[in-house]
Length: 599
Ligand SMILES: Nc1ncnc2c1ncn2[C@@H]1O[C@H](COP(=O)(O)OP(=O)(O)O)[C@@H](O)[C@H]1O
Ligand SMILES: [Mg+2]
Image (cartoon, rainbow, N blue to C red; front, side):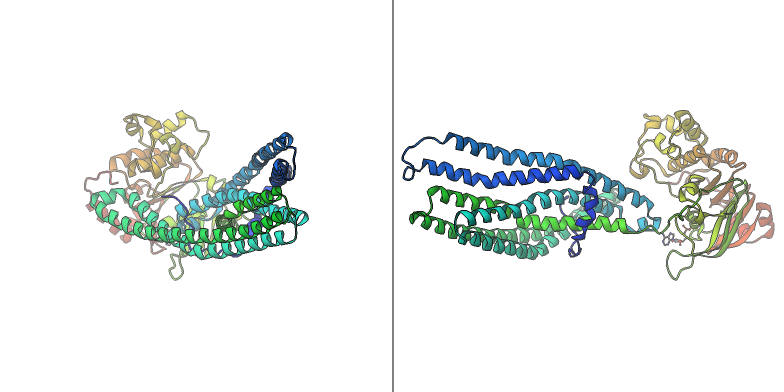
């Protein structure tokens, strides 16, 4: 289902500047570029000499001009050598130049990858990863295509046409190059116009292909839903509807290609006929030899072979340029969150965190936080509770500087997090997120992710503290079990415990738990709380929780509602105050139903 998926309306104009952006990458190996050019010219010269060798062979065999007949051995051997040279030189050129292309692809691939990780979360949330990966893929392929065809097809063909025109003009009369020139101009003009006309059909075909493909992928991603709703026949019918329009678009595309090919054939055979007429009458008049006729014929054949690809190459080059331009446009997009020049690393001594008068909104017209302030005392545990959607996880994202507040600031030990490097900030805060997504790798890899040099013993300890040992021991592959894409092969509760083990291993000075035990059953939760309390001793901890039972022992509890702090104090104080917290507490105490692991 792959194939070309040029998004219909990306405009081509201005894409030629992508070519300029590529130049620095190709200047990395100037000698190779230079040598490749040399071999390219050598191969073309050999190609142009071929018909001349042919002429001499024919003339020496022509009895009317040459009564003593001998096989012109040297000539034939020379002809063979020239043929070999055209191919060998071409291969050498490709070999030498391949390195340049590969290096450019690697450099640009890495640059894009780094850049993507630098871009802010908001960018990634609104962008579809699948589409992004295709853009990059197409861009790097475009580079390789462009090099092969721009340098090794279009330019040499133009060079060849020039050489042939000169040879014809010198050896014969001015009519020959004139016919060649006119034919080539008509041919190119026709090809370009017809190709532009055809791009409409190609786009239609790609759009249909894209749609059928998106539909199929989405359907397969939702495999489980399709199964349990028994809607496979519906999905198939929908897919076939998409395929039908793709089929039709493809047919139109095929017919237009036939029209293009026939038009090109008309130009080629018309000009060939004209030239042969001219040459044949030259031979009849005795002005030209038979060899001359053969030579002219060979030139014409030779010239139109590369031109035959012109329509294809023209379209593909434009497409490659557009693909490359898309990648460079991505690279030009500046990250919204950047380190200040010369920002120092964050220096944590005590671990005090202050949210000061924060205002924040994700979208216009909907303020989420408004003049929000909160203070985490060094080494203490602060709990934030509140209804879903009140902005609790948003606090975590702001603390990690995944988003910037519109107003106010966040201080860690007196340092504004905007004035230190993002790297040092994130290295020293740990989080167990609300939704853990795992890497498609082993359990051990996922636990050890934050600490690259962690040994297996440490990983085992962390897993034990996170109450994972029983689970892992019963797996046939133990710690080497693959968790599947996004961790879909382990349950929600297991995922959460893996994330907790990851944090236990990292042991950062500041820790954040965002509903870290929401998917655990009470027994499992109680088993882990002990380990977490040990770790939290002397570390500044922000604990976001839904179940109040997990926060009763926090030093300070903050009740949040609609982006505002509505109550705060210790558990005892809040119960005595008999406000919202007390009400939530009563409600939850009444619901002490037996719980089970929910996800
Ligand atoms: N990237 C986003 N773009 C727009 N709105 C968002 C985004 N992320 C969260 N929200 C909205 O902001 C509100 C607060 O979200 P969040 O902080 O995750 O709440 P919670 O208190 O449940 O953790 C929610 O109403 C949510 O829909
Ligand atoms: Mg949340």
